Amino acid sequence: MNGKDYYIPAAAMAVSLAFKLPALRHNWRDPLLRSVVALLTLAGAVFTFAAPPTIAAVNRWTGIVNVSAPLVYCLITAFSASCLILMVNWRGGPPEETRRVSRRWILGYSVVVLALIALFALGETPVERLRDFDTYYANTPYIGHMIALYLLAHFVAAVVMVVLCWRWSLQVRGWLRVGLVIIVIGYIFNLSYDATKMTAVVARWTGHDLDGLSTFAAPPLASLGALISAMGFVVPLVCQRLSDHWQTWATYRRLGPLWHEVQISAPSGTPSVQMAWWSAAELRVIQRESDIHDGFLHLGPYFDKGLRDGAYGSAVAAGADEETARAVAEAAMVAAAVRARSADPDGKIIGEDEETVLDAADGPRDLLRISDALRHSPVVQAVRREVTV
View (spheres, rainbow, N blue to C red):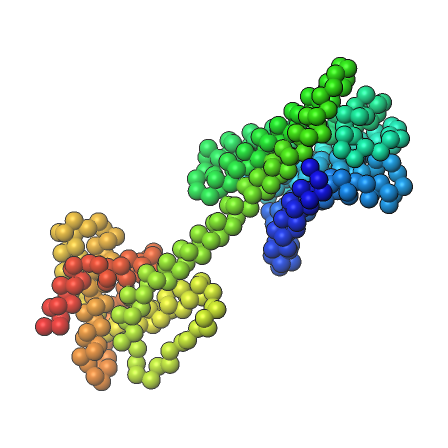
């Protein structure tokens, strides 16, 4: 792998990080968001500093031969810890328990980082190796221990991530499950990276030469593993947000028939609220629900409870369930009230004591069912024909 193979994934991580930073600025106390930002930052740093051109540059700038090796190992170790911490915060639970487990992972991997630095300081690496440091120094005192320690720390994190994500994926559905399965696939590549590295290092310990596994096979596996894992963390968040956005627009559209139906009930001269085209879908839904409730208030004097009860009986007789029958009855009453209001040019109040309030115990979902009934229910259509005649 050349420098480009490392810098392209690093750039992808940087772009993802750029999209997350504004949210972090507004909600920096969110531990899950902080964990995502830390993971993306460390993943980008690993790819950047593991690239051979960067390795040579760091060695040259610092004047310390092979100092890039412990730097990259420490970054990989920190990245492993960030994945575990993100998983802990993502899964959630009691805040105290989440913080306690996160602190344990941070403490454990901080000790590993300090040990890596100490082992490098105790050892000697006089010959600069840009691509095969692991196998070249596998038998060197202290340096060999440093290499084994970082591989072991990475292996433990990968195993724990696979086990946690797989178990959790069996308990959830939807985009979260998809993301967890993607993470498992990514960490299988990471385990393959560990296996090839360990095989090459152990081969050196036993006097054999399998350096090609470490030099040529392991880096692509690490790149694929990191990219796939990062995708697994991002996919549920992005896709769930898109799904929620789509659902909000669907709610807005489904409320359309009811909203149009009650517009006639607004007193003449009432200004209509025009929202800007860039207004958020959530605000549009809130405005549409508010308009509908205002329409109900104006239609209240014209609501006919007897007609509603009759429509309810007709819907039940046609095989509708309780909730659907109630929505059909309320929709029929609204349709009849709209026509009664239209036939009353003066908009005369019949009497507040005769006003009927729609039962909306389920909030917006009732409005959706009423709107759907206005559009599709034969009972409502029959009531429309009767009141028109």
